[in-house]
Image (cartoon, rainbow over all chains, first blue to last red; front, side):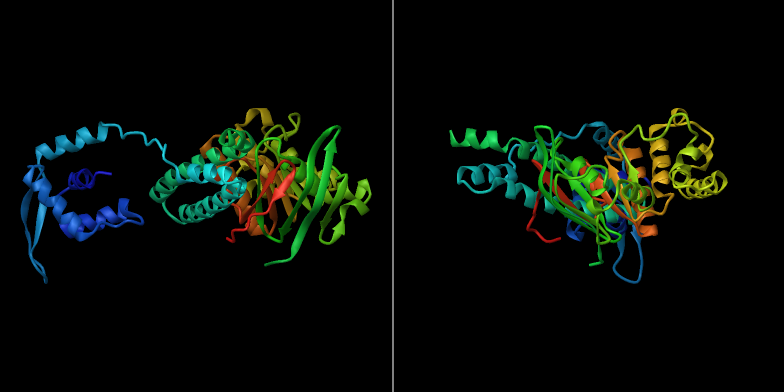
Length: 174
Length: 226
């Protein structure tokens, strides 16, 4: 996830200072991973250096003065290009679970137990996400559904593997 | 943990040479939603049918509120299925010749309720789960999602203690499936009913309180505590 592009996208709705950007980002996209202040300011410095944002005034308050940042035309072009650039599909060829299953079979342990334990852990996580989804608004539902569909994909692989364990055991032994 | 409502112990069931269940056991507590998971042909549906008294196991025992189903007559088991159990299946469960309202009222009519009384109760349930506008339509005139919602109303109309749901979202897309499982779970929670939920969809199983895994006719015991 490109933090810089996300901040640029947020600045398209109007100039903001760093603290405000962090607050809106965390609210919309942060979920369990809020941005660190250092990350916000270092990203803004980079965007400023690259001409994608500019300073648009200073807000005086009770505390230290706060710079406001506005997106430039170059920044708008950059964020537009980013939005229409597809994300690389993630291909998970290095799965810890796959390794565990193969090693369990190679050592004569119960690979089905490995899969059962994992299924249980996945379903526990899915129950938590489902509860969170139900308590949240539509944006919470979207992010939770995204995670739920990925966990479900893992479980579909797990069930397919469970159905192939005997064949897999023979192949690993050979 | 609340009281055990339904239990199946060491269930064995064969259909001809094929062993569908070979020692499956599970408990369902009051107001508990239990997902039954497992690959196709693992015995999930047979387990559900045994627990619901639709088929009798060759060996092992099913008890509901402490009563052994094998000790009941066919008539008693039928009455139990009509009053204390509700059913939602994947598809094809509504009678095509009847209106949606008549379908929802059907379990009450079969139990001997007068048409007016049965249909008034059915209408209440259809309003509660927001399918009242479908009352006069035939099942063939409504969408798959609507049809499942009507089926949920029919499963609940008798105030069952257990709802047996066999792939209730299996024929629906993700959006409609989500709506149906939410409806089923919410109404069960409201009425205090338990659900035995057979599904191959993990996102649907995530609405349950816990899961039982069936493989090769046996229930798997998973050590990890929730």
